[in-house]
Length: 359
Image (cartoon, rainbow, N blue to C red):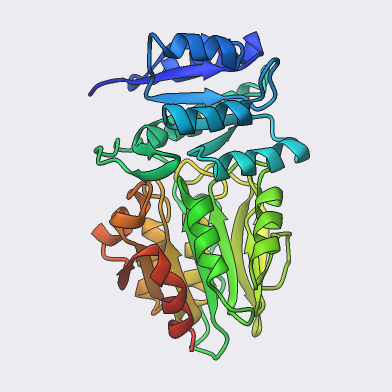
């Protein structure tokens, strides 16, 4: 397989060196160049065009967002924002996604061995996913490249406690659980914007870094009829409200009597992610059963596939985003292949189908 060529643009020499080391440790990736600011990067791009660019936000002479807009209008290349993601920075990163960035990843925290060991897989996966996106005129479209088979990983059993009960028989209260990854920020916006204010309660896992989900939820809350917030432990799942799993925390659906709520907890990476879609889906199958509608959207890998199948086996209705509207047709495809999907739909049809299934 041809190696994915990466250019790193960051004003910190330590970050450039660390990212280069992490990415070059993957046999499918090669860092071909680095630059300390956008002006130097622009000169280097004239001679050597990479498959993917990692781009810092705050840099001297020209900020990363300005450079991103120039790239997308002049020579579109898949760009991954690499940010420390402070509260202010995460708002800026949301702007970057609007302007055409493929994904956002956390800037490595130097000196934290566990962080680097865990983040290495996620960082490399992010670059691989970005390489599968063909960016044309600032629009993200599917590029038909075979997905790289993921390495062996933990299942949701590593986080889920032993079942103390099975799901209730079907009730009138429906809950929607949604999983997404690469390309999911835009897919979720389209889906949630199409929902009426009295939609059933929704819990979402979108793969994204810690501190980023707050800005993401706030942005959605400002543009959607439903209320959207980052999930906190013990939040109730109620009509007209959407809970977004916080970055770096697993989020599970639980039930007490007829009340649904979420448990937000620490735990190991599951399917190489935290939060994990499988953790949410499998908890929903356990505590919601026939009361659940499961939706799996664009993303690389297979997180959520086993959970979707378990949901379907418990009588839940399941929906997968179709290949034509996915940025990366990985997660939906894996769920489809193992028989976990009832409906395969284009993105702009999912909201209507969810509402129909919940009535």
